[in-house]
Image (cartoon, rainbow, N blue to C red):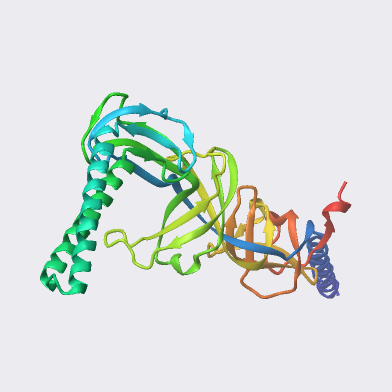
Length: 348
């Protein structure tokens, strides 16, 4: 009898212990089900993917003006560092000997012209051979060429600015004697100003002539456009040359400044998130934790762009236009957890 009572008590204790353990498991499940996180609703936005480059500003034209004739500088009308309009006269080379030569050639031309007219008249009357007529015509044409050449030399005593530009450097002073080919001044054209960048073979197919470029120079932002894309690469670097054109009406931007360039390539739909919301799974894959049907889901992502204050990302799994991303408590939950959540705006 005692054995039966003892056995009964042991059985009853086992049942109670089992029920207690079962209740403990239920309490654990309840506790786990009560995990709560804070979420934020994100909607896909239009994102323009941009390529970033660096370069330097450079003048669109640099020309060294040279003398076309010999002579002494009798007048100088420019100063180094100043801007001049196209057609402005810079210097005058003493023209006296050129004027004398022009008059001499003009007299010779008149003489040869009369000789040719007489020869032509005699030929028409049959008193002059065709050979003599040809000689007179040749002499006349030579005199005409000499006259035109002397006229060009006289014109070249005046040196003009070929285009709107700034005189960057001066190589002459009043009274200097110039020979043909001697440098006079260096002029630079800063409007438009160019920025040359180098593009890799992976990026060159994304750049087209006419594309808009955002440019940052000395903390100032400008907008330019691609005006040249080379079709052959550098044989050493395998990079392609691309040139950006930027309007510079007031010549505010000088040559040689460091520049940061961004060129938009294509539009895409993406989410913008804070960098703190990106997680790593056990395999080291980048992703975000979101809520789908009250369950935590880890979704791998592709980072499209780092803009400093966050990331533009694209989900590798195609889901709806909106997501509920966990902003608080993500470190305490894992993929598959059943949880409850509150929205950021509801959290005091």
